[in-house]
Image (cartoon, rainbow, N blue to C red; front, side, top):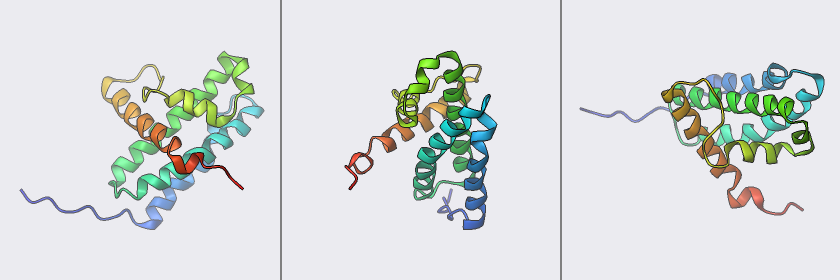
Length: 138
C-alpha cells in the first residue's frame, strides 16, 4: 500500500474555514454581553487554528478541529449563564479552564465525538501554554 503525502489545504479553502470563526461570537451569544466574551475567545482560538494548518492536516481534520473549537466556545458561553461569577474571569482563563486537562466538558456527545473534542482540547491547552505565548510583552 502506497501512502501519498498530503497536499496542503489550498489557501482559499482554508480562508473560508477561518472566516467561519467571525460568526461564532454571535452564534454563541444568549445575551448581548456574550458577544464580547465570544470575540475574545475567538481571538484566542484563531492563532491556534492557524497553527494547526502548519501541521499539514487534511481538510477533514482541520474542519473537525474547527467544529470542536466552536463547541468549546459555546460551552464556555453556556457556563457563563450557569455561573455569573465566571463573567469576572478573562477569556483566556475561561478557555484554559475549559481545556485544562484535555477533557472538554460538552455533554451529550458520542464516545467518538467526545474523543475528538478531547484531542482538540489537549492540543489547544498545549498551544495556549507554550512558552512563546507566555512571554512578557513590551
